[in-house]
Length: 287
Ligand code: F3S
Image (cartoon, rainbow, N blue to C red; front, side):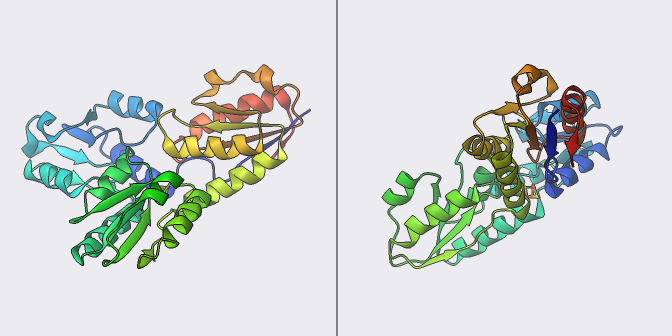
């Protein structure tokens, strides 16, 4: 009989919960849109669309803007996008996580003062695209040691470093260390969200104790992918699944300890379903 350890930090973080509730609260209302998928989870987006909320990529897709409501994502948007949405005269509901808004404020204020901005993060992630869009001067995006080593900044001007909220804390420290040795006048703002750090630390601890580890989240969720990488590093028998349908229970059969965690955009019902199925199959649990 196996023991199951379910991470206490698994599932929706504060910012995602808040954004999703903002959409749920508008079910039944006409002409409601989200600017991009509200979170990186196909099941949640599907449910939202079934309730009449449309996902758009551009302000031009809004039908009859004067009666429309547009809900932005927890990841946040650039200033240019915000301006374009506001210009439609639709009602804008800003679901940007307050922790991301804080980064927008730093970038806006510091670049207005002439600082060069370095964002530690993945340049293709919507949160980073949004953060970048609040700078009025140069922005550099760094996510690898090579990029940190090869960066060329103006030594006569200040450098402000911020981070994507879901970036791996250890990797952030490594990259900051490389940048700090370059002799620039650097101000480091660790804007990694505590929820991310706590989730990653707990996942690492659990993965280091178990024989098999399950990480639940959408394939497009970058924070889930990072959790998976962390867990895989500790536990070679780690599985990245979106729902219970992706899990081959037989692969867990020789495990005495099974860990479960989930990304910040994974709904509770999906986590419960995985937990219940694994528990039913392998019995005893530790919660
Ligand atoms: Fe916000 Fe942190 Fe979640 S930044 S969206 S509470 S991971």
